[in-house]
Image 1: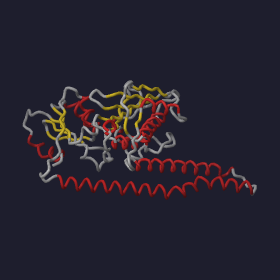
Image 2: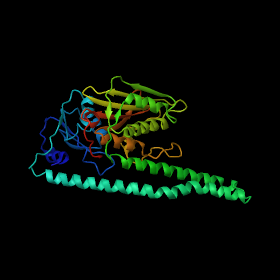
Image 3: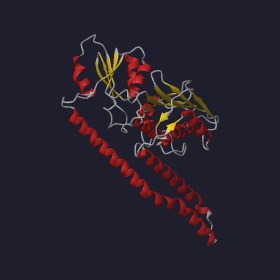
Image 4: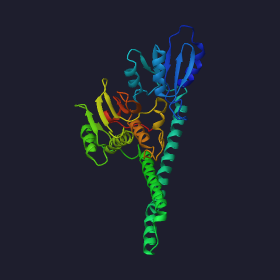
Length: 353
């Protein structure tokens, strides 16, 4: 029985004055645009729209306790809720024991989902590879047309705007293909024994061309070294910085990259911009692949950056969420790697969800 099924089974049996329980089930909404959550209150059952929605409901209903599904600690959900509601007990359910009839079915479903993910990721890689050659032609042929017209003493000016538009769209397609390839590669290949010092890596990225001009680093001293693919952390930080740079305030953009150790163990990274911010109802949506909240003519981007960030964070046992900047001006994206993450223990990373 899943947490959602258990909630539905007991929703109508709550007597008047019974303790209120917030039950968060991240798996119940996998087919929808957001993760699912369920809130049990004395009046009955209410369907939430994800972790962000569960946080809002908990703040409004003040439940007597919060109940989480198995594995919530591994993705940082338990730590997030405990920090948000320090006075509310947070409990994590245990998985079904062997022999209770649920293991075989759960294993079969998990295996089927993993196989579907692999097939989709392999298809993406094949499609990206096969599309690169015609895309290169789209980027090259316009210059040939210009050279041929000039050689024939023909005026290139009447079609210059059309050619420029073609090049712009082809460049966008090229960026999208590379982003799709990066997204599909997360979690593939053997994990090398890279030891990453976050402060050193952040300082190196800050010096690279294309880094935000007004970038402020706030890296707490004494952070543990991370045992993970260096490329994964580079991509994660670079995508966070690019996203913040694109959405920072003009004409004085400001980006802050901060990192600190969590009180109970683990690590928290956050990147904050001083732009317009993101309305609460869209803060989960921005992590969906291909999602942009503003037209690409206004903000150039593939819509894949934050999706890649969350995918990498989850592969390494963490989570990525968005909220408002502390001063209310702009947005903040936070990546949490809990104490049980393999980046600290040197274990095997989990399945990308």
